[in-house]
Length: 180
Image (cartoon, rainbow, N blue to C red):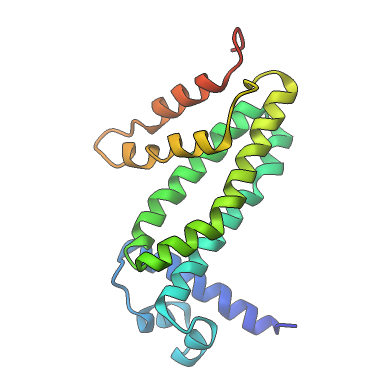
């Protein structure tokens, strides 16, 4: 069992890394350790390489997003829950872009393989809930939805954030005929 101070150190390191790397992809490991209030030894004991740290930050973000599905579905209709969840996912994709600069091609591949399944499963929960209540088309596919939403983070980076309008179009395409 991991000691509570070790868990707290790890959490502080991840929080410091998430903020630091998103702001500046060239942030050093020593700067992250200082920001987290831990020594270099503690940092490297938890994350032996910069890439291991970046992968952990990204995995933590995906776990957080995937973990919100039950709460969202419990509090709103499936299509609205999916809208909220996707907006959060798009924000995470934007942050991932900043983190991605710190990853090698192999790191990108590893995180994609590690997170694809849970993200698809989360999307499928929304789609299945909508199919059950008749608000989402029977042929809606989680892989198609994820691929379409991949364009949203780019649409939000210009002077005008077009992502809400684009997401509305995507969600409208999921609706069954005659449903608002």
